[in-house]
Image 1 (cartoon, helix red, strand yellow):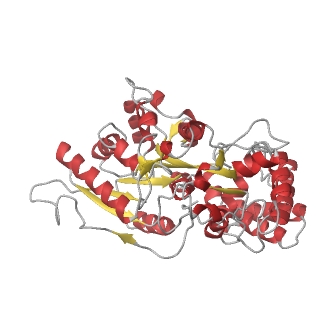
Image 2 (image 1 turned 90 degrees about the horizontal axis):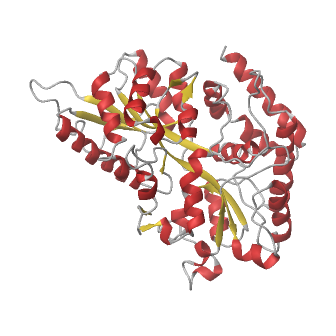
Image 3 (image 1 turned 45 degrees about the horizontal axis):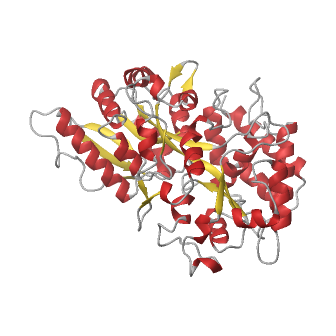
Length: 461
């Protein structure tokens, strides 16, 4: 949930440490640089990408111009660049919504992505990751890594109350009701109308109940029976057993870290902070002063949730990819992406933030689990570094490692990625959740969200 996709009117590209990795410009007689945009724009991650790209240049002689782009400003930037005929050759760390928006505007060289996946070996990728980045059998992008939405809960409180892990609607409801005591809420999740995390949390609960944004006929299904059940569930559990007022990712984390919530819906980016590896977001529960590892040790992780109308537990997750743009320096671009996804670079790319970079490419043809196994031991954290496997039990690490195979997302399988992007910008679901928690009946909230999305769908035709 640190990541969201929203089209805004401002345009910004930030280049750190010089425009070209090979110097201030292309040397005389040298081919123009390969232009690579990266949405990994945090300074430490950008610098790590610079180091990897420099090794690519050393190995191939192909100069690279690496540009850091803010995700919230990506949509306007890429469209203005397309209009000016100045698209980059490669884009990295691109979320699913943005990938599909580029596909909808015919800005992707899908044949290049197909050739890269074929060269690396389709069998070395998560099957689900390839499905989410494909349309009609064509490979839109090369899936790289992702983060998983998780429900984290207080194992000690659950054990004392004799409660089962909260992996179904009924179990979450029972736990929220029984553990909502005194100054401790039953559950914390984002509910703010203007926060993308609200939509992510809702979708994560919805997909496990068989609630889909778009039906098989292409019509909006957010007011269907399963979706109404999800609105009812969120209205009951969150409306009655969470802290008062609109919540966002910062307030929910603070509540859980202070020991004032029995459950929290967040992304896997929570895990390094929960483990005390980030100084500006340390656990602050009463027991944590004497025992900094208390909260992490007493927290369990649920990776997939099932609702009464669903057929199986499902999990929301964000998947990021590499894309080659139309008009790119095609062969050089393919070489760069293959390098980034290969043995020389991929482990270092994942190690930037392993808690939120779960590998979509599991290994190589010779070693099918090479990257997935290596990921388990990459040090996570910001101010302190430790592998997550040293903090959390094996079952948690396995659930995270395997999560890309379970990622369920609205709209993409129905070929409605452009619609998903448009709804993300307008935030009809977060607004509906906020209205419901403010007193609007759940059924009415579902209908209003569905009608707004139908209007968006019509505007796209």
